[in-house]
Image (tube, rainbow, N blue to C red; front, side):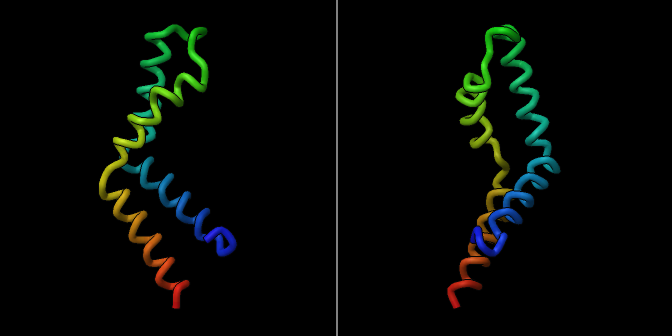
Length: 81
């Protein structure tokens, strides 16, 4: 998957889909709200990752997950033959 470049293509597809559906903007908004709540100087990147990652993973739209999974399955099927 890595050698063929498929991993990078899948990452780019995921990035595009998350931008299209507004997920990235939603995550930015959550980060800003958390930073405002805690105070700009009291928040580290690690804090944001710890708090936002579970919300981010849970909020990826099902159609995006399904498309990515289908692309992975198709790739694996094409390399298995």
